[in-house]
Structures are given as C-alpha cells and as structure tokens.
Image (cartoon, rainbow, N blue to C red):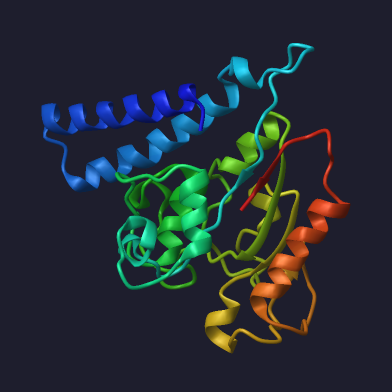
Length: 242
C-alpha cells in the first residue's frame, strides 16, 4: 500500500473520530457516515494522481475494483481480526495485501441491507431496505444511483457474479442486475440457501434464465468470473467486479 493511500485512510479515521467526539455522533449515525466516507474514498482513489503509478505518457492508470461479500461472517470470525481458533488464510491474505478496516460497520444483521448500502452508498432508511429482499415488498428501486452506474460513467466495465439478493430476479416487475449498472452478470437471488450448494437451477445470465447448472455453486460462480476476465473483458478498460 503506497504512502498516499495510507495517508488518506489515516486522516479519514482521524476525521471520523473527531466528528464522533465533537458532535456526539451515535453508532447508527456513524455507520451512515462510514458508508458515505468509503464512497468518498473510492472516488478519491480513482482520481488521485499517484505519482509512483503514473505511466510515461502522463495517463494515470485506474485500478480494477473487486468486492467479495461474505454472508453471515462476523469480523471476529477471521484470524486477521484476532480469532485464535478459526483459520482463514485466504481471507487473511486479502487483509495483508489490501486494506484492513477497523471502523467499518454493517448496515444490518442480514445480507440484503449490507448489499444495498454497498451498491448505493446510502443507509437503510435512505435506500428503503429494512428487511431481506422479497419480504414485505423490499426491493432495490430502479431510480437508485448505484456504484456500478457511476463507474461506467468514468469508463469502467462492470460485472456481477453470484448472490444478488437485492430483488427477486425471477420477477419481471422487480429490478434486474443489469438495470442497476452491470454490463455482464451471472446472478441468483438467493439460490444456495434455498436449494443447497450443488447443481443450482435459479441462475440468470444477463436477464435470461440458464436452467440447471452442473457442479458446485462456488465453482460455477468462480469459473464464470474467470471466463469473463480471460475472454470477454476489454483490456483497455478497468473493471469493477462485485
């Protein structure tokens, strides 16, 4: 991690602490502020002129952005966050080579709320997610401005693979993955939870059902992502993978 990036994270943390102490911000307000601060950081990282990463022609390369979202995982479950029993070497490697945040907060105790906040930069009361997608009519609204939409505007390719859980993809009345800014997708609403991890039959590729896929859920998603990167991506563009 270079000095400029580390400085941004350091001063952001100091700013959060200052605001919390000076204005007596409670944990819920701080959670909202954290989400928007991360979105602000992403914008900075995409536009900050890193001198050590600059090409000879003067163009600053933009990084590929990959988000792995794990369900039902508490931060205390990871060895990189101090768990003395559970071994998580692959996830710990992300922490070692990337950024390990200690002041980030989930927007809720179920996955849909966190997913909605990550993609919209807004808290639950702002984006309308107060329950799991599909319950009590909860769904991502088509007028939401999403992270992939914004990244497309600055030249990114955007792709989604895996569990969506922001709408019922089987329902034409609800928003699709591609409508929310993704160029390419292989997604399922919440398939592994309902039918188990093998031979899933609820995947939808770019809006079209694909029927039963043979194999394990995780392998199918991983292979599709690797296939896209190897054969379909534009090498001249950065990509956002969620």
